[in-house]
Structures are given as structure tokens and as C-alpha cells.
Length: 566
Image 1: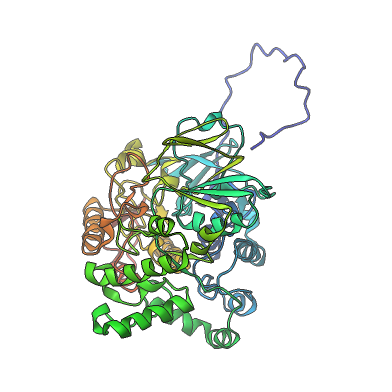
Image 2: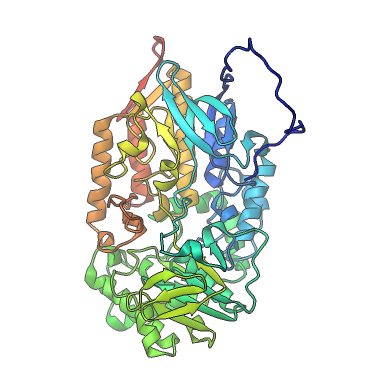
């Protein structure tokens, strides 16, 4: 990022000002609300808060709206939620008029949708782009947050809305020798918008999570040779992408509000097909046929979404895992490569289930090599390439598809300090604690959209975002109407919610996997299940109960006594 410049002569001698007073800090701009981030959460938050008559200032590190859909423009980047579900539902004209071209839209198409929303609702004038919030400190006397940015701006606001995204803080592993590599180093999460010339080059991809699984088949088509470095094999199912079925689209558009209401009754916030509560409600032949049909259709959570007990029963889970491993062995010609690609260290879907287009078939290409890091780990990166046990593999380009410091990383990269100057890093030293994933005790008036311990990454995130933004808007309206200017979660309510989230997770198979759901991908990060896994209807119901009970678990107060409101 280039610093701001002006036209003065930088070589001129400074004028002596012997009697000048000490430089005073400029007064901060005061607004009602600051929104950090201009992805889908930030855009809707700006729109919602502005509709309440509030003055809003948003900050976005990128030069454009879109959040993760701006940064993640790597080859093959595509949404893994169906386009008819991955959209806002707050405006019927927007729902009716926007047309998606594919079942699973590309990064470019999702970004165009975000840009269309920003233009349609005139949101850009509230956003300062290419600006990072470096600090946010609570001031108890004024009952406001004070913000500093890397551009030198100072802003004060009553309400602090974090829309930084659950999967937005890139994770670059510390591999010895990386700084000595003489070729090009890239990250899928920070891909250059001008594109990258990979034709005919020796390319290494490190990481086989969702972004790696999407990028690898596309890169393989142009690279001279592609070497994939896999630490952990992941389960992936076919996306089954293609043009949107016109009949289905017509049915959905005929009653989009009704369709969205139906989605909200599903645990994942999408109309996924649940055949039965148990995989053993069907006989083996019938169950196998159901898996085959799902594999052929693709999408919507993959094979593990067919039976409810896939998440809770090892025996039921094994039926789905064995089916997918069987498919891998059918597709991949080299038996040794196929076995390396078969996950055996975690139950299926306890790590993020991936959707792909020809991922496993890519390993049949003559220009693709798989390096199983469980057998031959990376020792170091050299000026010429990557050294594993016993040999050096020359590379022209190294691409890190190594994921994110999920759910907490983007928040902790800001210097956030609450009551008494206590930092968020101190508050979360033993792992994140929140109340409903919406607020953190000791950090008044700070809301976290799709924050830690909310459903966030485990459901259709557009549903999660919409629910949180609307809850926050209703809360601010409630407080404004009654003269309150401070809300904080109570420590007891936060402790109970944090324990409940972990208790529900412990009743599933998810803790058996080393995954970013548990924070396992970040060295030193406390191990805790980071999202609410009880399903969207249960979560939304709990939030409604809290409000109906007078914002139970929150403390609302006013700077000055207010009259009672019926």
C-alpha cells in the first residue's frame, strides 16, 4: 500500500518556528457506528444501520467491496453454496432482478453481485477503501469506541460492528528457507488481481483444503508440471456444477421469500436433502444407491448430508467415508496415489467437506505429482525449490493454499481493548468466549457478525450474516428508543454459552479431527470448537428467547436516567 503523497517540495528546508505550541492530536470524526469490513456482512450492516437513521463509517483494507470474494481470486475459485441460496433476502427487487449463470458461481460472478449491491444501495460513499483499522479502544466516560487506522484517521463511534469475516486472516506457515526462494511465492488467499502467468512453469501447491482442491485442477491444465504437497488428505465430493436448472429457478423465484423461509428451517440454512435420521434406517443396497445418486447429482454438502447420524455415530460415518474412499480408488489410476488421497485420520465431514470439479481425476495427468508429506515431509525451501526427505524438487512458483486463522484471527489482528483497557487477546488467552457469537463480555457496544461460537462457517453464511445484522439492528433500535447507550454481555451468560457450544460439539464426531474448526491449524492457538453446531433453527430460536426475556444475559444502561418505556 502506497502512503498518501502531496505536492510540497520534500527537499525544502523546514521553517523555524521557535514559539510553536506542541502539536495537538486532531479531534476524531464522530459517527454513530463504525463497521469494519465491506464484504457481504459489512455491506448489509451499512445498509441496515443507515436505514435506522444512523451515521455510518466503514473501513475496508481492499480497494473494492467483496471481502473474501475480492481477495480469493485464485484459479478455480468458486462458491460451494448454490447461487440461489448464496444471496441476500432483504430486498425482493434485488432477489427478482439478479440472475445467476451457474449453479455454483465463480469468484468473479459473486464479486459482481457484491458490487451490484454496493451500487444499487449507494453504499460506497460510507466506505474508506485501502484502509485498515489498527486499533479500537473503548472509552467508558464517553461510552464510545475510538478507532485508529493505518491511514492516520481517528474516528469515535457509539457502536462497533465487526464484519471482518470468519475466514479472512491468511495463514502462511513458517517453513525454513522461504525467504531464500528465487522464484515466485503466492497465496490463494491473496491472489494478484492482474493474474499470474503459470503456463509451462514448474508449480508447487502446498495445501489441499478447499482452495487447493479448487485450484489444483485448473492450474494442472496450464502448468508445465504441478507438484501437490499434501499434509492431510481431505474428503471431497463432486460439485456437479452447470447452468441453473430453469424449472428450479422459476419455482424458487415464484416465491423467493417462501423459499428462504424454508431454508431457515434447515440446520444448514440451505434446502439440503436429509433422507433419514440414521444411515441404518436403509438396508445396505438401498443406502449405497442413495450415496450413488447423491454423488452423481453433486453439491449441497455432499454424501455426508444424507443421514443425520453421520455427525454423531462412527458406524454411520464409516458408511459414508468408505463410499467416498471407494470413489477415490475408482477414479485415481495409481493405487499408491489413490491411497495417499484417501483420508484415514478423521471421520468424514469433521473437517470442512469440499466440493470439486475433477479434483481426483487430475492426479491421472502425466504432468501432476503428489507428494505425501506424511511419508516425505518438507525439510526446507531452497533458492531453487522445495527439499523433502532425500531430494530437492525444483520449482518456478510456490503457491500456499494453507487456509486461515479462522474466526478469531482477523479480530485479534486489531488492537481491540475493552473495559479497563483489557485487550481482546487477553480475554481470549485460553480460547474465544462470546455470548451467542454476537458479543464479548467486557467489550460493550461491540458486535461480531458471524463471530466465534455462532453458527457462521457451519451453515450458509449468507443466512448467518443476515440473521446477525438484523439482530444487531433490532438491538440498536430497542436501545435507542429507550434511551440506552451501553450494552454488554454478562460474564455468566458468556461462560454458559461458551460451555454449551463445546458441550454440543462434544456430542458429535467433530472434536476427533485436527482441523481449523478446533483451531488446530495455527500453532499455539488454544483448542476449542469455534462454531455453534446445533443448527440454525435452534440458534435463531435461542436468540429470539433472549430478546423476548428483555435481552437476557445482557446489561443495558444509560449515561443519564431515562423514563420508563412500556
